[in-house]
Image (cartoon, rainbow, N blue to C red; front, side, top):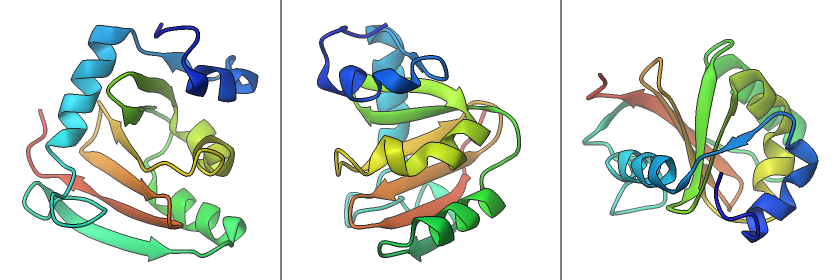
Length: 139
C-alpha cells in the first residue's frame, strides 16, 4: 500500500473495499508502463505505441460517457489505474466503468488505465475526454 497519508488515498477511501493501492515498487512499474503509451505531443495516447485509438469528448454528460466506456472496456478483469508514480491502484474493470466519474472527476487530474491481461489502455483527460486503444507491444 502506498503512503496512507497520500491525499488521493484519502479522497477515495469510500471505495477502499473495491480498490487495492499498489506499493511503491508496483506503482513505479505501473507508472513506467503507462509512460510508454503516453503521448509526448498532446494529452492522450501515443500513436506510435497504441493502435486503434478512439477519442471521445463528453462534456459534462456522465451517462453518455459511461455508456461509451461500457462498450469499450473489456469485460470482467483487473485493471490498473495510474494517476502518478506514487498513486496507482488495482480494481475490476466493471467497478471502474460504474465509478469512473467519482474516481477521476473530483481531482481533475489526467489518468491512465491498463489491463495486465489484454492490450487495453485508456487515457482520461481532465478536460472531459477519453482515449482508448490497444497497446502495440503487449506481453
